[in-house]
Amino acid sequence: MNDIAGAKKTALHELPRISDRVTFIYIEHAKINRSDSAITVSDSRGIAKIPAAMIGVLLLGPGTDISHRAVELIGDTGTAMVWVGERGVRQYAHGRALNHSTRFLEKQAQLVSNTRTRLQVAKRMYQMRFPGEDISRLTMQQLRGREGARIRRMYREQSKLHHVEWDHREYKVDDFSSGTVINQALSAAHVALYGLVHSVLVALGLSPGLGFVHTGHDLSFVYDIADLYKAAITIPIAFEVAEKYTETDDIGRITRQKTRDAFVDGKLIQRIIKDLQILLEIEEKDKIESDSMALWDDKEKSVAYGINYSGDNACP
Image (cartoon, rainbow, N blue to C red):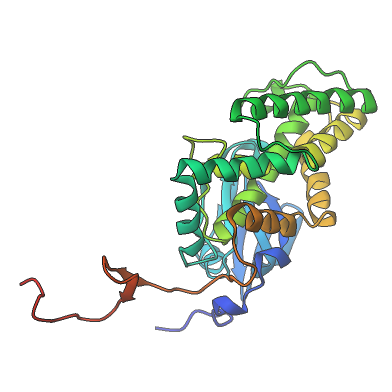
């Protein structure tokens, strides 16, 4: 059988770090294939070539037709794939992590499984919203109240600044176009942020579902981390879009472009990684690892796998 044409699979340690990658690319109504070490995206306007290893996350919208070879390359390069609904508003599925080690996942699970450490991490998240203030004596109920007041104040300030009428957050998950321009822009901006945060979490081998503030949802930790940046990035962008554009414009596309620019200019991926290191107490020296499979042992921390063990105490 002939070898498949294309570049040799890149070793994990040779791949660009998640912090060095483009934040996200949204694709809809297009065909995605592979050409050597790049993916090709083709639609009625032509064909574009994108180096797969330089993408943080591919947001695959409706009408996307992706080949097996393209998925194979994307998997090899550790690029996250998130299948989303119309205008990128809803997430349906995602691909494999860049990090094949479970060290960070085990640390996350350890912290979230203990009430004391979970509270410590949750309070660190709130402390990031209120820098310079002492919130150590506040309960979670008080912190939620303060956070709610902060976001409501943010909406009022942005409404006044951009002369955009604001009443309350209202949208239909299954009907993006039914929302007002500001609600459409908020939905598009927030989902782009969720996609980027999700790609960073899975690239590091963390669980999107093990949240510290949010709980009970498979994206709880995504919402935890995304909430740290909404007031500074996505909410202002949404009001800026609502000030300049109307229902006749493609609000989703415009908002995603502005959001992506803000992600890059503000080096958001690096900020997310730094904040995760602070929140989960991950050492700077810790790196993404290649496959490091071991067998759990009740006396030793772990033992090597791939060995046919034998001994006097072995079971028959």
